[in-house]
Image (cartoon, rainbow, N blue to C red; front, side):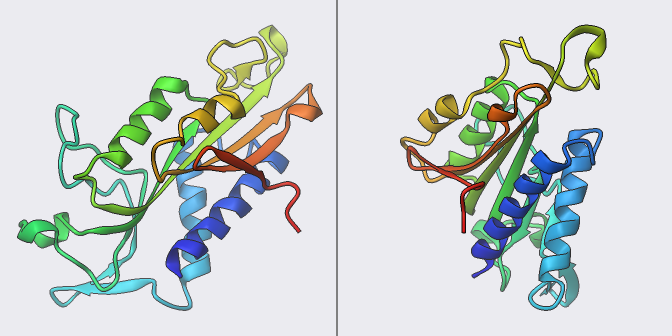
Length: 208
């Protein structure tokens, strides 16, 4: 199944992140790298569809939401995977702008709780028209002060760092799958990678 391929790609990505946390400078770089991994995985089959005779890649960056879903205006998904064969949402027009989605992957790199809650609320909205819903939350933590490897890193004393246990609580009443990967420069015991779903967590580091 397509969703299983996406899950496997996310898991590979999370393990790669904790091994090589500085491959990408920004979250936009993270999006691009994941897009590349997923494109490479799907390139042998099922990567393209036709919409009214025009070829379209099923993986799209910044595909627009069909509705505003409680926001002032329509937002965009980080990575969207179009349903195949394509389905038009509620006969809306133009068709190319209103395709139903097999999956969405929303990312956060050193983001706070508000950012994650926003992703969850949009994905959970009944008018999101997303079948498989994924959130990838990444923490990159280095020493504070002048010893910090990058200003884009969390300081180890930051109060914005979301823990795995706090994220688990956010999956109690929805079908969103959250992947949490954390690199910690000074505390190896806090280097983690988890799949979190339905109030449960499974370590990606202990998988056979």
